[in-house]
Image (cartoon, rainbow, N blue to C red):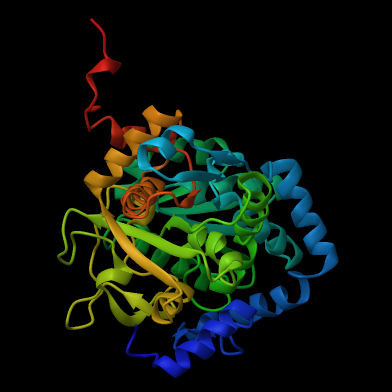
Length: 418
């Protein structure tokens, strides 16, 4: 448990999390969250916060949002039983299939919701950032849907390893801006997007893709992504005959994980497990396992857990998956770890690759490298807890990862014939 939260406070904060009363009026999830931003952005954040209060939970907005989720995104997404994985793992394995949503990942839920909000707030254009490219694709598609211009900031490293998604963004009408500064991945892309926003905070809407950043973004993204867990909970009861014993989701910034976990927080019998990128080792710069190895600090507007050295310098990260390659994590995840409601573990690059291949061969599903980390951890957990029912958030499909995957030989020889 975090030293920032003692045992008595943890009980109070956990009850507040379950009751849905966090963040508080300061944008805090216990000690985490808040708003650490330049003065020039204060009016934009205050305008966004007021816009959320005025629109997000109104019948008019929710009706339009739910209509788009149903008729354009394709929700509800399927809950798929995995019989061969179940047999191999000795568990009852179910998959929440966000890979079947329009554009191929959970990111579209948040993107269309924020695009609709931006339209109501009178934005003239939208900017976004992306790591794995899925949020960029989702933002480009959502902007096309609502009729707003879109610019996507993307690190040069990620542009190289996520070429298919870059092409998709361009075809959907977005401008893709390569970021050559910093670590040239997601953190640098967010920094560059924030610099752009400062130049025109009234006319630009910044469409953040994960549950990170200054308040109210972690709250907003959670509210828009909670449809994942809401659907999954109902589907598990109806199709599987009951709630899972454990639910797994990969965690970078944390949008798909908080979307799955948040509606399940009150079901205390469910063990919730977030899986970070273990990369190639435990040292700084070798992984993106923020909650496993990080310390509290401020990153990009929010006080959370981040990867930093002893001098407070934010460190670069490594992961085979572009979407997990981030030096921080959403503040709500930091709280959920601190109060003991969610456990956070890591899976290495090698374990994620092996899990991806097993899923392909066993169930005919090519998942994203991000999601493969969740499968790797779920497999280990299942073998230690035989006979349990497991839910895995399959956050996206792996087509985007083919440029990376082609660098790693398929391990089974039966896939190639003379």
